[in-house]
Image (cartoon, rainbow, N blue to C red):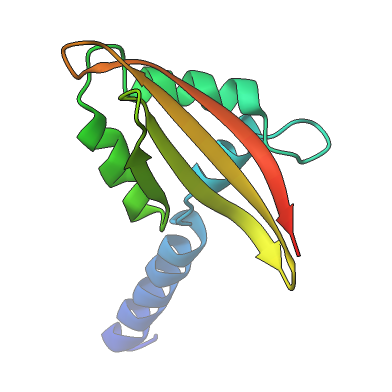
Length: 125
């Protein structure tokens, strides 16, 4: 006969093993977002990005929400002479070349967003 403590240790070891193998944590949000916003060749899909931004900052939204979003991504926004808002996000870069995303938010007379358009462009020295 085995002592009672041996069974307890075996049970604890079995339960620990079961918990460690069955409780796998994962977070695929970034992979999913990147896949949705990319073309099959891995480039940023401007049409999808434009649609996503127009859904997130729908017609009638205040432009400061878009500006806060851009600033949180280390981007910059400015108001143009015609009242539109122009924003720039740095997508990627290396020595002497950068891929940027330009956003133009058309603004209604009441100061709310009418539409947003996203375009990707390259800058080099």
